[in-house]
Amino acid sequence: MPLAPKAAAPDTCCMFGLEHTDEALGHQYELETRAIRVAVKPAYLDDQSDPDDDRYVWSYTVTIENRSAEPVQLLSRYWNIMDGTGRVQEVRSPGVVGVQPIIAPGESFQYTSGCPLETASGTMSGHYQMRSASGESFEAEIPAFLLESPYERRQIH
Picture: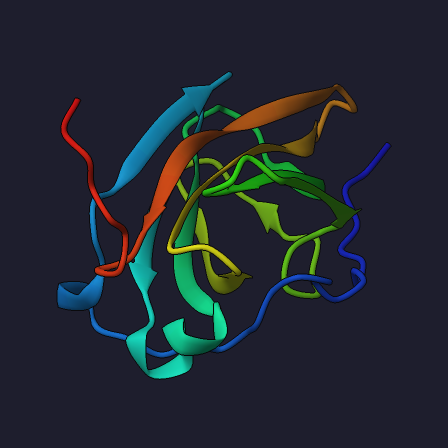
């Protein structure tokens, strides 16, 4: 089955087009599955957060690099979002930021989205459902990453 770009439903939990510089980004998390490298850089957005109202917002920039020998298409995504109290939100939808990109060998696709939480920290993890040009479907894992704010109270045990 040939790869065909399709529009995807917008993210239900996230914002788009967030602007920031690389210096504002925190640690980069990386994971490679079946020659698809996924790298994520989260960043706390102080100007969009309101700790007095239990609103903490992060952006995350994802780079999906195709290190395989054939084109792949990102069909859908799954996110597992856990806040600082252990509450879990699962998000599933077609594509990312409104597209189902086709990524050629040696190329990459990058997007920035965001996530609000009611706690000062959390984690995100998940996977992308991919399809190769030869028609094989597989999951490309997204590395688990931390959402940390300067408002998180650290405890030493």
